[in-house]
Length: 452
Image (cartoon, rainbow, N blue to C red; front, side, top):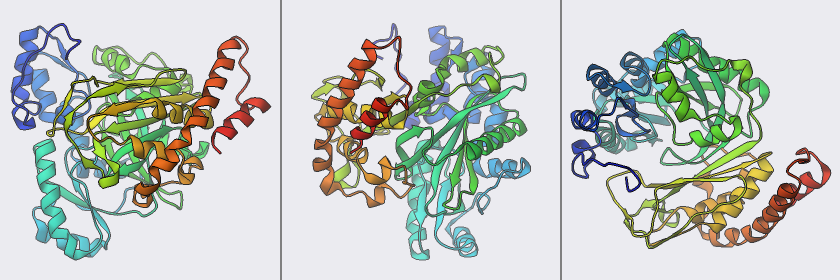
């Protein structure tokens, strides 16, 4: 907002009076002379009524049209569509009316189960229920959070899959029926079912599974007559079988890592598709190179169970250098409010392979400074040294086993990794016209040293 040519107030801090107020947003769009609305990746971005209202106001909605949003935005309807498209789906229910119906359904499926909002996404409102006496409390909490975040309280139940990886597939579709997939992202490092670290390619995803997930995502998109950008999400069990989760009918927070490995600007492509242009490439033209990792830096205290924090940012120093990108709105003096998601910044690191991406991310996290409010930096610094992460043997239970007491000790090791990354970067700049292949002996040895 500080960098914009014009800004319009849309209401008080409470989301229902501002960012969830569709009429007010459309009124501001008209007043400003805008011809299109990009909904971002929160609040009304997956709201079919909003997409329809934008179209009826004579504006372009940058995303899937209302009919597609209705079909896929209601999660149980999306599960039915996945079955039609012959994509595996975990056992679950239709939307439930009350906790009594949920109790019966959970008993039939068998604990543990997940309570999930029928509308919305991003992990908000989701609750793991391990046994029956946890159900009522979880139902009340999930209903309240879903109502606040998405304006609708409906929940459904799904069987919980243990030792699973959360793998999502980025898709693009135009209005002529062309659909492509751009590769997967592993989003398994989560707290409260919301992502903290994402990477591509997924360390556990081989070429065979990647092709299967891509084909499944395209089948679902074609069955829904999908348009614009979206993400088809899957759970992959320890037995390598995968199950459809949902379709996020919007841009994802973690889209930059896909941009880094494909060289594509997903937002620019969204705008072109919304303007009626066909996709400028086919599936065979999509080339993925290297590896990328994103760390979501949040206003949370990882040593206190990731308790959200608020306050005033006193100092910010963002990292830079080869292969590092930072998406943020941080500045000294900024007030971090309590009304919204605690995301402060996204740090993205790219490398010619996963080893180099990890080394660069370690350096970037060590360089970054944010003071004034607690942040998740201590967690991220230690997670990038955790043996399960380094070896790629992690799943959605990663944070449950993370020990906050050892975070400061682990982060200290990033200094040597930063020095090594600087040496590699200097050499790369000096030999930028004759870069060695990623498997050159000295390059491989140097990157392996960074992980020790």
